Image: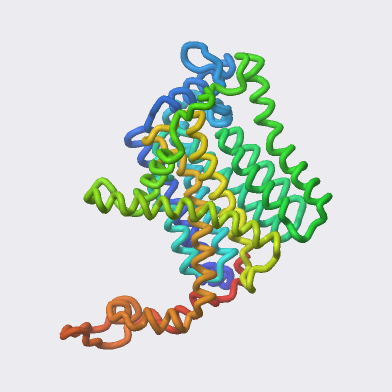
Length: 428
C-alpha cells in the first residue's frame, strides 16, 4: 500500500490533469448554480424541445414547431432529468460543466501520453482549462461544449488508429463522430478530415483505404441521416437552414475578418487596445488562419510522400487537418448561412482544444529540432529567468543586484533537457 501511494504521488502530472479537469468543471457548475445558465435563441430551442420530450410530445419547440434546424442530442440528454422534475437551466448547466471538465481531462491525458515534455503537457492542459471560448460557451445553455468534447474524442481515437492500426479505434472514432454530428451539423467536418487521413495512409492498399473510409463514414452518418430523413418527412426540408443561392449571405472576406478578430481576442483584450493595435492583431490572426489551412495540406502531402525528415508528425495530423477543414468550411459557410460577427466566438469554440493540442505538438518538435542546448543557452542569458525562476546566485544586471530565491528549481540547461527528453514510459 505505501508503495502504491508513493508511485501515485510521484506522477504529479496525472494528478495535475485530473485536478484541473475537476476544478474546471466545478467552477462552471458553481457559476450555473449562482447565476443560472446563459440563454439565447438556440438555448430556448434546446430547452423547450427537452421539455416537449419529457412531456412525451416529441421533438417540438415552443409554439409546436418541429425541431429541424438543430440536431437532437442535446435535448435528448436533458429530457430524462427534466422528466424527473429538474429545471432545464440546471440540467443544461450540469451537462455543459461535465462536458467542459471531460474536455480538459481528455486533452491533458492525450498530451501526457503523446508528448515527451511534461511542462508542455501542463501548459496545454492549462490552456484548455483557462480558455476564453470554451468557458464562455460552457456558461450558456448551448450544445458547443458537448460538440467540442465529442470532436476531441473522435480525433483522439483517430490518432490512436493511425498509430496502432486497430479496427476498434476506428470504430470508436466513428461512434464519437456520429455523436458529434447529432450535436452540431458541423460534425461533418470531422468526417471530411478523417476520410482525408484514411485516404492518404501509406501502410494500406487502396482497397483497404476505401473499405476503412466506407465503414467509418457509414457508422458516422447513419444516425444523423435518419434524423434528416425525419425532418424531411415532417417539414419537406432536411434542415431549417436557408440557402442564399448564388448571392453570398456573408462574403468570405468578411467572415475571415470576424474569425480573425475572434481568435485575436483569445490572446489579447482587443477592446482595450487602440484601433491600430486591434488591426495589427487581427491581421496576425488572419495570417494564422490562412497558414493553418496551408499547414493542413502540407501535413497531408507529407503523409502521402512519407518524407518527414526524421520528425514524426503523426500526432499532429488529426488535429491539424481537422482545424484546417473546420476553418475553411466555417468561413465558406457564409455563402449560404448568415453567421453574424457575434457568433464566431461560439462557432470557433469547438476547434480550440484541437488547435491547442496541435500547437503543443509543433512546440515540442521545434524544441527537439533546435536542440535543448541552444535554447538553454539563449534563455539562460536572461537575468530575470536565472534569478526568479531557476535560481543560481546573485546576478548584477545594469547596475541592479538581484538576490537569488531561497531555493533553486533546477539548473537551466539540465531543466530544459529534462523537459524535452524525459522518457515517456509507464505514462501510457
